[in-house]
Structures are given as C-alpha cells and as structure tokens.
Length: 505
Image 1 (cartoon, rainbow, N blue to C red):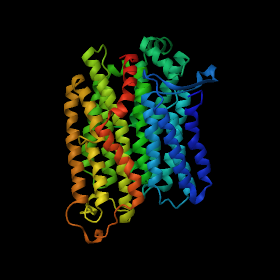
Image 2: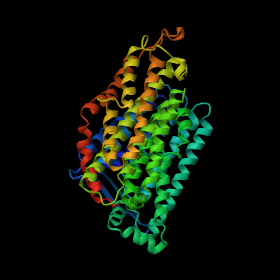
Image 3: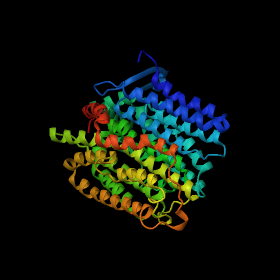
Image 4: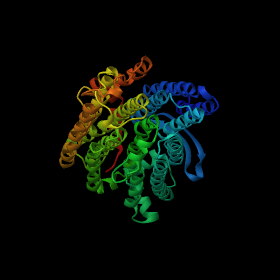
C-alpha cells in the first residue's frame, strides 16, 4: 500500500489509545470504542490487500540487532489477516459489553487496548524475538484484568492462568534458543525454508545432538497450554468463570487462537517432521480434548463454566485437524484432505471466536439483569419476558452446536471432511463430541428459556435498542458465513495451499 507501514500503525494504534484511555476517566470507554473501531477498519483493509498466491503480504523489514538474529520483520497471509480481523472484532465486542465498569475505568480500558496490541503484534511478527515480546505482552494485561476486576476467586484464578502460561512460554523460549544457537536465525520464514529442505534438523544435530524431537515437544507444550490441549487445560475453567464476562470474551475469542496460530505459524512449519513422528499420541490427546471438553461441559451448572469447557471442546477440533494432516509423503487424495482440514481449522478459529465471544456477551447481559445470577437452574421461561434475548442468544447457541446454515457448522464439517480419510478412528471417536455438545446446548436452551417463568423473572428486562444494534452485526456474521463461507475461504484457501506446499512432514 504505497510503502505505508500499515501493520506497524495497526499495532501502535491500541497502545496510543491505551495511553489516552488511562487519563480519560469516565470517557475511557468511548476512547476504547473509537480505537477498536478504527483497528477493525484497518484490519479489514489488510484483509482485502492480501497476495493472490497466499504468500506473505504487507511485509515490513528492517535490521534490529543483526548479530543476535533479531530484525523487525512483519507480514500477514490469509491466516494472519483473518486473526487480525477476529482480534479487532472481539475487542470491539468486549469494549461494547463492558459498559458497567465504574471502578478505575481508565485503567481497565487501557489494559484491554494493550491486550489488543499484544494480539496484533503476535499475529504479524515474523521474527521470534519480536513475536515473543508480544506473546508475553498479551499475558500481562490479561492477568491484571482478571486479578483486579474478576469474581470472588479471582486471585487464585489469575495466578493459575499466569503460572500455566508462563511455564509454557519458558518451554517455548528454551526450545527456540536452541534453534537459534544452531542456526543463528530467529526468522520464521527462513527457518521454515530450512526445515522444508531438511537443513534445520541437520544444523541442530550438528550443534546439539539428536534433540530435535525434544525441541518440538517444548514448542508444542508452549502452544498446548495456550489453546489449551488436554491435560494442559486445567487453568481455563477457573480463569474463564472468574474473569469479568467482557474479559472472558477476549480470552476465549482471541487469546486462545494465539495457541492454534502458533502451531500453524511456528510448530508445524519448523517441526512438522517431528510432529509426524508423534502423530498418534497427539491425535489421542486431541480426541480426549474434544470428547472430555464436551463431557465436562455437560456436568456444569454455571453457564460460564459450561461454555468454558465448550471452548476446550471446540478448539479440540482445530487440534484434531492440525495433527491429522501431519502425514509424510501424502498422495493426491490425502493432499485434498489436508487442504480441507486446514481450511476448516482456520475457519473454525474465526467462527469459534465470534460465537464464543457472543455467548459470553449474552451471559454478561443476563448477569446484569439478574444481579449476577448465571446458574442454569436459576432461570427458566425467559423466552416469555425477554423474547429478543432468547431469540438472538438461541442463534448463537445453535451456531455453537454446529447447526447447518450457521457459521459453526462449516468449519467443523471441513475439519471432519479432511480428518476422516486421514485418520478415521480419531474422527469417528471425535463425533461423540458433536453429539454431547448438542445435548449440552439443548439442555441450556430448555432450562434457561423454556418452561414456566419463575415469579422473580416475570419482569426480566429484554434487550434494549442499543444492545440489539450492537449485537446485530455479530449475529449477521453467523448467518452470513453459514450461508456464504466462501467470503472467508476464498482468501484463506490460497494461503492453505501455499503452506501445504512448503511444509515438510
């Protein structure tokens, strides 16, 4: 775009907005809304200016510390650009949902915007040092948002979140330092090219011995915590339930995607051969994540914990698709399945972010109207006093269920379309997750919205005009992508084909 550093501007924007919001007092939310709206507009511009061949676009590159392998290197392809749009959209949703922050609103919205900057930086950086700074930056504001504005058990939840994520980051950092000592490079594209040619493993073995598989495990551990992959998921339910609902929207809608993105941008391109070597145990863990997440959701009575475990289940499908496509020497039929699975994974990342963010937004509305109630058994018959809330939340719930015609269906369908020919056993068992999820969602609808109306909810307020207007675009995305998924896939598929052509398993 005529040499304009768009990605740098996009990353700096929320930092500037955060500084202004910090001193804006009661106007902090307005500053955050305007900043996130401009961020969404810029991310959409990036989305519409991608290279047609699926390679990196909007590239910005300059020396930083060449002797240490560090340079300022930015770029996005269909994967990165879609995550920018998702991050901007979920941040806007979160800020809109947080209209009852009365204690230190300047600090609250400044932290939200810093978190957005961390997301933007993580999805655009192509040098490990630069990327790792933003990866860690996103952790700090998330910790304080939970710690300062969370529920009664916010302290332990925030600490558990921080410790788990930091432990994963340490494993990731140690593995990448070993790669740097062996190659002298921290550039993702250069290292991916070396891995595809087989020279990355040769360099590591020459300098450190046969430790490549251990390095791959360290990188996988770092991303497994973030997604999360069972058994690294135990921090998530407490964190999601104790965080303020608008913050939970950010955690599940955008931050969890950093782990899946890291697998696709770093782990698979650099360690694809090692991932293929341990493909079976990874698929077992992915299947456990899918089925266990859905089963655990069915056992919950707190709406936030229901959808916390449901998020584990839905992101498990992404892990299933990624690990299933890691097969060496794939023939033409297998390559088609790989493309279907990877398209499904990327689309599922976006769809889950939008749908999960919307569900926690609805929960925030219900809490505001009920004095903080969020137990499934605490409601009943809300369809009568609040038909618009029931109807719009019903669309989001059916999207999460994977109903054909809504966005949640398409990504899951493509993942299973790709995984079944690649590993039918894993796909067949994972179908149980779909069935249990359907039971969970239908149970929520039945207990919350149908049946007799308890006397205390007889005058339960429905959504007002501002809430309906704010939610309309989100529901519109669910309907639009359910019917016209090619609006996203036509931009993502070139990147999918480009990635598969350059990965080595």
